[in-house]
Each structure stands twice: as structure tokens, then as C-alpha cells.
Length: 69
Image 1: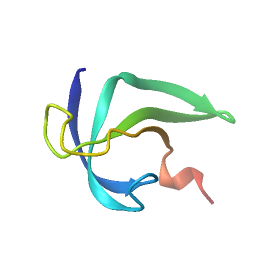
Image 2 (image 1 turned 90 degrees about the vertical axis):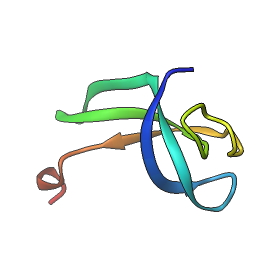
Image 3 (image 1 turned 180 degrees about the vertical axis):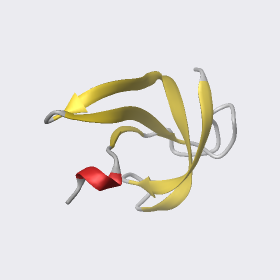
Image 4 (image 1 turned 90 degrees about the horizontal axis):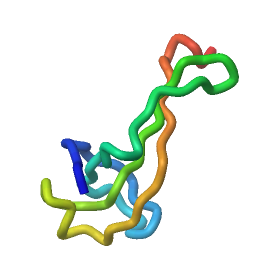
């Protein structure tokens, strides 16, 4: 499992903000309704090896803030 530093996000399983990692195999650039976006797969983990968290994986979609409104 290749990961990179992720930061802190809300884990839908733990129901709290935890340290997370971004999984490299889940990262891609895509279009969301014609807007360029980044899709990332996140894992609940407390260290760089992906252990210590609950291990739940979920996807996020990141779009530029100037496209929101």
C-alpha cells in the first residue's frame, strides 16, 4: 500500500476527526460536471504505513474554490 501524507479528516467510521493518509492508487485527475477536479482515496490511519487507524477507505473529490459560486 503506497501512501502519502494526508492530514486530518473526518472518518465516517470512527465518527471523529483523525489522522488520515492518501492512497496513491486512488489518486487521479478528473472532470466533475466540466470542472477539473482531483479524486483521492483516503484511509483512516495514524502512521505512514497505514496502521493505527480503523482502516476505513473512502473517496474525496477536490474542486477549485473559485468554481463553487
